[in-house]
Length: 557
Image (cartoon, rainbow, N blue to C red; front, side, top):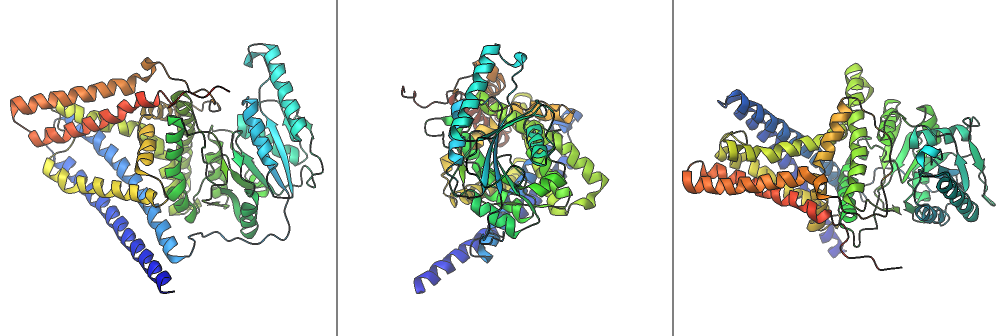
């Protein structure tokens, strides 16, 4: 009893110390921003120096604002864990009855073996009252295939697979990609199937009939749920009738020998830990498209999935919240799948996510300006953070070129006075970075693993820049699945932004050394800027490392 009490006291003190450090970090962020703005206003620069100085100020404001958002969520989660035994705020109940559930996977020309593994895993689900549907969203028109024979062969493989496994097969005339497919399937369940649909039942002995389902659980074609996936989610949905959906994490398993898959999974982990938990506590969690359970009534109420965005999950989440529905996140790894296996696949995934997210940011701003009272302050704050996240590409570009400009062209835009920089910005960097690493180490992530994910995201800055620019000008794009099973290297010329800036950073470091040696002026400023150029050079050079994703050649089958 005494040892348990001492351990509880120790944990309580650690949580209290952590909360104090987080509060101090948030305070430092505010203080630095105030001084940074005052320095910028007071600095006596030429117009072009003011321009680059403003860019840097905006970039730092972006970083600090999103850092504030992360640490604010971290503060909520740790305080919640301190006040409750489990830290979970979502009510649950023991299931007496088992409401009917539809388990669905929508697939657009996915490899047959990937889909087969997923459908087989559905039969391991222990939930008794379920019906499994495969929504084949593949386009079989001649323009989409190299030959009619290859299209017919793929279709026959899908038909044979569904019949052999015993999964209901749904098709319709192609429109609206994944969102359109699920909406058409919803119409089918409601008894209003779309024109040109086809449905073949291969289920045997299932008690649930099409249309009876109360909940719809959505998986991507490569996600494999654990046997107990359904029960914890349905029990929480039953206990909280105002919930539209509950999201669970994505976990990648193809990381053993693949650098890109491992780093992209760890990048996901940063999001699925404290950020999602904090959003859920403020009823601001958004859907991530897979490993999620929806209340069918809620989907019907908002008119189904939003088909105007390539990130239909994020867009539909906003519709739920604007209609008064709630959302939640359960931080329990309940399914596993495959992450992108090379830079080409990863960049395509990130382009789609950033294009859709920034595109929805326009809707978020317009809705807020039209009627700010439709959501509370916390929800608007979280949606603004999420909607602006992929502007990080432009921010990274500004941070990379600012020290280069100072070293090569003597434009003093990186900071006004080095002593003020050391007084305010360096303490923030040290404290926030260590707190960030510490928080994820508490969830059993190693430092090298975390840095892997951070570096891979940083290398995507040209993708984020292009996608966000297109989204701002209203380009919607088309839904494309992430390529799988390739592990290919990109031609080096396609990586020219990363490689070119890496060489420019290295050149700036050499030039700064010569300036220090020959001029003997601005030594401190040149040293600080050289450090950041070297830091960016190291990060950008990792593009060569990730461009060879396989750490060893796969063994022949």
